[in-house]
Image (tube, rainbow, N blue to C red; front, side):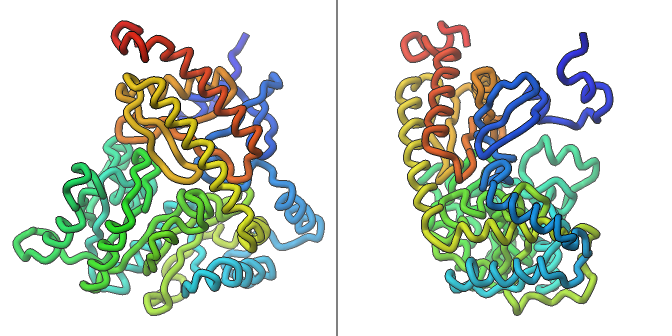
Length: 431
């Protein structure tokens, strides 16, 4: 008999990846739970790589989409004015920007994170007349050529097939440990006429590197980098594609640090329902585009506008932020307990909010945990330059009992993998 994924093996490109890790055919989903053809339930600690912060098939958002579709609402509109876009722009300004005292023009690039980054790079270069962009070790910014040039991962860069240029990599915070301030290194190199670094148009960074291994920049470091940019007329860009929309606990990941980036990239969960959508937020003085200089056929995804408008309602009150904080504490306590239980296998706990994980001393253990946890009914992925981090990122709306059930399943998976490691050590445990 053919296997469960026979159709995909025969007909889909070899580039497919996630379906190789999760060997089943999924059929339905609700909030943090997913079911396959056989009826087996899985708890989703991956959340569409951060595109499903409000869960699968969020009933509030679904109701708005159905209502819009049944009323023959415009679905596709390029960048023409529609009521759905008008509603989104108004609510985004009122619920997100105004309460945070942020002033941005909203650009709708093509509906992907990488397109948001591409547009940010282009407008920074256009606004400054300079071409070089400073980016950081272990960064991930996307898979199209411009954003890939700012991505550190060697495997992903190799897929480009051409030389990637226009960027200079600098060490991220704590790249050399806690005692070396890499912001001072950046400042020295920018000011040294002998450093060989062209004066950049922009500095591009993530406040917490999701794909890079859950590396979190310290607040003081972020503030120093922003000051370095301000003092030298360099635009400061934050890529909040994965960390935005509440993933780290606040709507923008940079709120706690009190930053005011010149450009912000958003995608993934800004679409509310897992629908394709992206924003590039630009301070008005740098919005120097000429009409049509960056466009795309699907930047007018009105279903995305409808879903996003309803999702923004979660941010009118502090309720969701409080729920994320409570869930974050539960995960953090669990991860520290696992690290203490298996110190020979687990090096540290990393992350913030509802994106946290375990760093394994033997990198292959992270993938083994993902595979074993899937057998126990949990979907989780890995990250880091050696895929050494097992990453937990459930929907922000996950129910507490479902969260705890998922953590129990992960604990069972760890015990199956590493039960004797805490006593006997890795070599004797045969892992």
